[in-house]
Structure formats: C-alpha cells, structure tokens
Length: 222
Image (cartoon, rainbow, N blue to C red; front, top):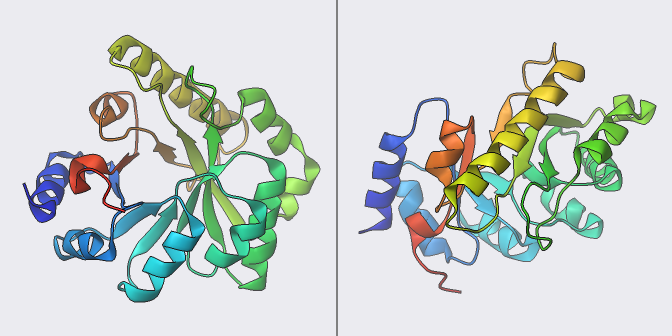
C-alpha cells in the first residue's frame, strides 16, 4: 500500500479529537513529500541534524515536531522553526528552550515527557520530578515556552493489559497536572501517546496526539 493511501486511511479512521504526527525520522524527503501530497502537514523527527536538512528543502507550511531526546546544546538549531517539542524531561532543558525561543522572539510549544514504561532505556520524568519543576518559582519567568501537555511511550510488548495500564498512568498524570497547575489554561490539552503498534489503545485511554511512523512509511530506509 502506498504512503498516500496509508495516510488517507489512517486519518479517516481517527476521531476528530486526535492529531496525527507522521513520524518521518530515518525516511527520505521524497517519502515525506508523498505524505504531504496526501494532506499530511505534521511530521515528527528525532535527530537535529536530519531535521534541519529536511526543513531546508521541504514545504514551509510543514509543522515539525521534535520527538527524540534533545541535548541542550542543540536546542538553538531547531527553535527558529520547530512547532512542538515532545521530549522535555528536565528543568534545564525547559529553560534552554525558553532562552533560545526568546532570542527568536517566539513562543515554543512543549510537552513534558514522562517515563511510564517498564523499560529503563526509555526516558522521562517521574511525577515527583515534574511537580518539583512546576513548583519552582522560576517557571513563571519562562515566558517563551508554552507547556501544552504530556508525552509518554509504553513498553514494547504484546501484553495489551500492560500497555493499557501505562497509558492510563499517563492520562492520570495529565489530569493531576491539569487540576493542580493548569486548571485555567485551556492550551494545556495534549496527551501525546500511542505509536504504530498501540495507538488504538492509546486513543481509547485518552490520547489526543499519536506518533505513527512504520505503519505509514514502512521499514526505515536510511
């Protein structure tokens, strides 16, 4: 099945409340163009150098989402154009994004990444670490970042009960943060969870944004 067909069928199957991020990392610009021609505008990348190269040659109305581990010294390279960063997992990174966004006179949307999986290789905050960040008085001075919600990756397993429980945990974190810190802030409304293998479960558990790569683009080509 072609990329265009996959995109159209997938988008047609999604509730209106769910945003599709087409994960284009490791796939060439030609494949992104095909998805673009099918109407997809939001793409996710996880490597700064690869993202910059693609951003330079692809249409300027693409909304680029950064979904990988982000080093502070590379923030400056993506802040001029990035639409959303999904992977904020410490206070220093959040501050760095704010500082670089201020230089560009931009407000950058970000998500707080939580560690919800049993796999230690996955990154993210604990709820305690997150509340420590949000309780810090200095956060009110970070006027060039807008915290939009949460992100998390479930364990890579065929055990649906495990995956479902982890997604429920992330939804619980979102609800806690919404009630305690963002009650009056309507823009805190995103739960980024669910990938090619588990996005239907994620949607059932409250996801507003899914990150789908292999289902659209197939196996990696670069």
